Length: 435
Image (cartoon, rainbow, N blue to C red; front, side, top):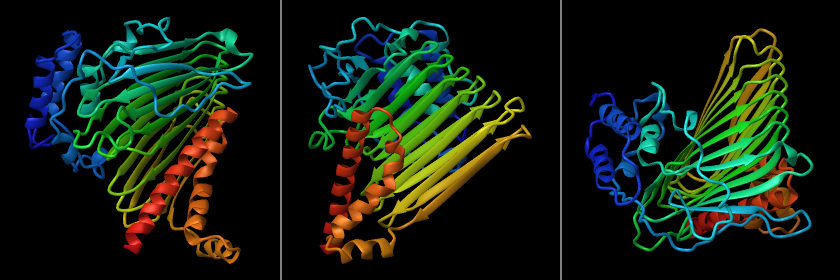
């Protein structure tokens, strides 16, 4: 164990003990054993690690997590963005604690094949990458054929996480050339946002891999709405071929600590990738987004827009890196991180550009501020109560990422979910002030 990695061995030994005493089909293999040994050698990152400098792990590492039980109850997602209508319903694929739950409609979507999907992490992998390998179960795989171009197919991959467990759900999404799909991947606590009274915090370590073929189009919404005591550390990778388009909207509402790492590689000319996110936090929550968007082909485009509303003592971190390789001439890339501070917390923004090409248009920006007093006065002068006016302005601040969704039902459902969260958070903040 290196001194630079960690000063405590107890968390590592606890995860090792869980693996050694697993009670269900977590197959013992060389890949898991190697990942566990890397974890024991490197430990968990501390605050002097630049990537984790603003994301303390002390509380996450204190919890005595358990493995999921072999039997799962028949459960349903708490958030269902689609109802049956003229545009058709989505196929719901349920997973409980990383494993397919009872009654799913996905029997024909079996486990992902071996190969690169099961490949271990490279030298830069951190402790959580290794934990994902150690505790990963059979991945869910969705393959959308190229004959779907007439109308996007819809899927809702719903993950429910039980109190106190460590779970590492894996999802692989493949769009063949010319395919079109709208997919929601949601992460919720099985007992709901409040969790079970007296229940232990959970640790969710999902990994989602997306491969988009030539000319394919994907709209992906990722919702994290776990219990307020939970910990969520996710990783997602996107690979795009020529002339493809990917739009990702990440919505973070729950968890005591929510950190999402998203890496996108634009590997074909004429492709575009739009990454956006909305976080609404309160109390002492921490929302951390890490993005790497790499342009490896000419005439590609990317947009990143991440917005946070922070109430109470909540905090946010955004680290966004745009990489333009020498071959990626005529790249058009833009990144913006905006933060609305409505409490005593803070926001850290760390944009980064790495450009090796000379014919590009790349820029980034970051803002931190509060509600506009003139706008508040305007609304109050028209008889709108102060609390309602604040919610209206905050909702307007968050609207842009969701407004870009092409699916009208999904756009409405996501907007309503965010609006309800803002109303609840701001009402709670006002109650504390009045009290």
